[in-house]
Length: 152
Image (cartoon, rainbow, N blue to C red; front, top):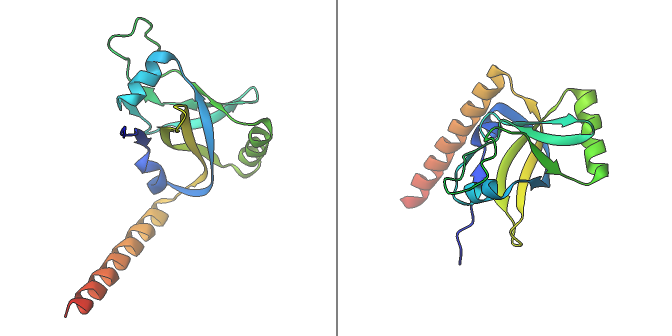
């Protein structure tokens, strides 16, 4: 069985409160697909924005494939493929509530198509991040004590 590639944006869940997620297709060029398959992509600091009724991902760095004849710009905006009603619904939400769209991961489905998981998100404040870290630490301590208690 072939190992599937999944490029994650781990920082997104730390910096944002995820309200809703959606899966969309990615319009890529051939060398970009090969680079993603080899794991040469980075989603950190990437975001999505509406432009003329279409959704594009910015700051999604895909390294140039070394043996490709065509060498697309690694930082070019990538078009996200969604149904029209999904685009309109999210465009309204972003405009009304001041939310942002953040890519969480890029992967290939079973048919070999490049897919992106997008999140409708709201930025966390510094104190929200500290609170999340504190809750995670207390949960770990409780789990540790429960595990030790059962070992006796």
